[in-house]
Image: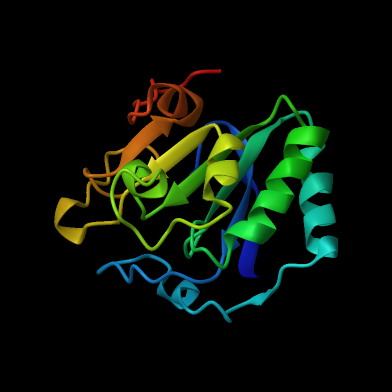
Length: 177
């Protein structure tokens, strides 16, 4: 897996101050995407154990609320194995930090309710490790700059544990601590 950047103290991609990892590779190719360079899975640098250690170091700060993954597309099957490994370590080392993931895949696609090329042998484990999923492709015609943590009106902010428990997408109430 490759990544293109890490942002420390990010406030745009989830609640509170966050560490954000932008991964490379996306096959959605949304019109108006703010990060088209990340479509190429070879863009950026290889994600190594040293990079993971850097993320753990940044997450140690008490003022950091959690980790956000976006891209590119974290849920591309070729990205999921490395990210599941990262998320397991984050859960072990920082059980009080939350994890947000931005994906062009809808929850129903990732759970197999709807057919999708985003599911693989890691997907269920991946979903079990995250707290919030901002799902749905960016739709330029539905772009809305007034939305918090989303780019277009079709995207949802989901409570993943509640969604997995009920088997249906459960919208997250904003600003839960």
